[in-house]
Length: 141
Image 1 (cartoon, rainbow, N blue to C red):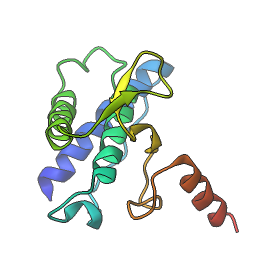
Image 2 (tube, rainbow, N blue to C red):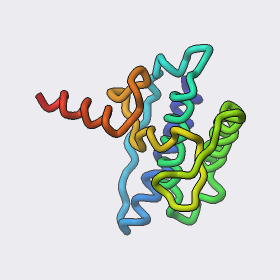
Image 3 (spheres, rainbow, N blue to C red):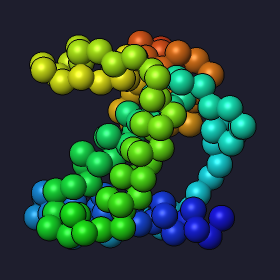
């Protein structure tokens, strides 16, 4: 668990450093504590789950890379390792033109995953913007 806490803290530190740089301020990073997601601790991970992990990885990379220390950071290396693992798992998964990014190619279904995954969204329902919206609306009642 300590290694996971350390890795999570590294990723958060990089993210907060990037946001601080972009907004020209100094945000303090909260303490990270890993909490397991039961669905991804199973022996078999569904393609939908891998696609959600990849969407979350892309989002974290995008919001964390805007400062000078990113290129040499351990966080960037960890996200690269995760990218390699996703690519190995999806080696036979079809790719298709991205519906949201002209000229880009992505794993088929990747655009259905949500950028900001939360435990409330989970993995057991279809990972779409519509399912997230429905979940958020249900929470407002």
